[in-house]
Length: 401
Image (cartoon, rainbow, N blue to C red; front, side, top):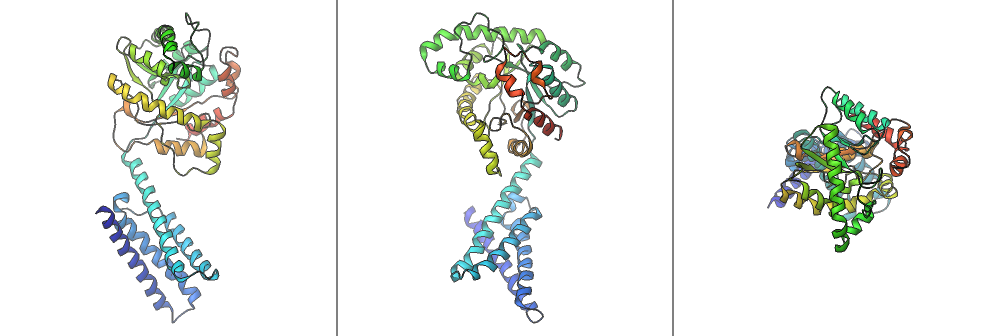
């Protein structure tokens, strides 16, 4: 029934627009040629459709407000162009009649979707902007602290085995209103992990170990010891007792690591764990899709979608809070410009939620030459990552929020 009701409303508005078109042609016919009267009649019909579809056909999506004016312009130009082109192609009568009708339906339904999205943004909550790798190097810390000081950043993750972790926390405390910190569990980089000779240090290796029961049994005690050591160091640096937790390169979502986190949740007062359930942004150009494929972002997105899907029910069962949505994997390393804006818009929450559940948008900002201040031997992957000028582009995009 809702579909039938929508079709009836669409027919009423479409019929009204057609009647307006014919009426204007009849009115102007005696005064000017058809080649001049027809574009004017099309404009009048387009305005009628623009208002009618916004206020009646798609009123649930628009809330009784008009579409953005660009949709009126698009619909008018498409209709005039198609109706001028099809006769030249000697198209059959049915094609002449139904092609504009089909195109109009596509345009107005698309306009309705954009209107609904805009209303979500107005009525919902914006995501929390979050930066990883505080404590990795002075150039990274400075960019993160700048965004926090200006009020644009709502959280950061502390790399407790990073070379500048101590100084970063001291600077964080000096902020007028410091946002929440999270423990950035690091198993893939840094100085040798204590008492863990068998612990794999790569994401792929840990993921593979999660699938092998004998590996899980052998590695689990060492992994637990490393987590306890990093939790202890986090408390020593920050003085915080309750732990918000995520992972360097999202390592905490690997099932073997998540097992250890959940086992320690109650005894170590872990209250929140980040997940990476990320909706694909709308309106991306082919160039941006190609970028996500080239950088491996699309592959990471698929893997982490799966791991987050497995993690979220387990977190809820354990009573741990997590974010509803996330953005920052698909364009990991290139969250700037249009990619950042589209990701930010997609992460908006359409309903009021508490802070623990709010969507998170992840960035990795840094000053120029930040990699020069890193421990080159212990953080080889991060050195390559932060050598990119994309780090400054992400910083600049966040400053424009």
